[in-house]
Image (tube, rainbow, N blue to C red; front, side, top):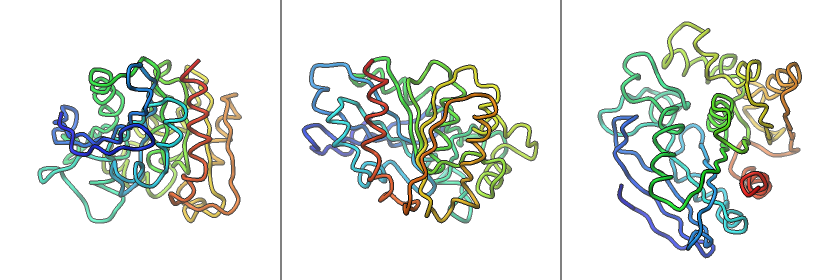
Length: 276
């Protein structure tokens, strides 16, 4: 593991590291924000998963999250969104291949060798973070768009692993929207039954833990009606009594201006669970 960026930020340090990933078979980057409380204390950690076309840089440079992480004493970890490198398969367009890992473990060629973002986020990255940084056994997870999908799915599939989960503008039903159908068809194959393992709307039906879901969604989001469809997840949760708070925010779109506006509330929400 090699540190490639080191910047002072709100009394702490915003770092970026590079390492050889076993899960993905390539060199990966992830960002870590260490708030000032990390000097001499073990802190909880909030994992952030970014959306299509993003890298670890988008969240750390655009969200303004470090201020609130410093206030609440929470470490932030933001991985890249896909495997990278010349040997990693790619595709035309922004919604498949590099920058579009969809937080699944691909089973189909040519993707299966490298596109294992689910295993990376759930297993490899936390093991690395917990071995190398002053973190204690208290995790939360959040994300935006494709990353919101990843956060919800990972939390629902791993009961007891996370204290809290939230999402901004998540793809809640990837099996039913064009982005998800394209990615799942390529990464997982034509059997739609296999897609349910990575579909939050399907997973709430049999979830073994009723971890409350906090979702913020802008009502001016350009992808709301075609790709996001949060009402599908809300209906699925209500059908089985799974707690959900879906907050439709008037006037907000899909951008990081939206995330900046509410990231403080999300970090406070996670901190309340992480510090209990």
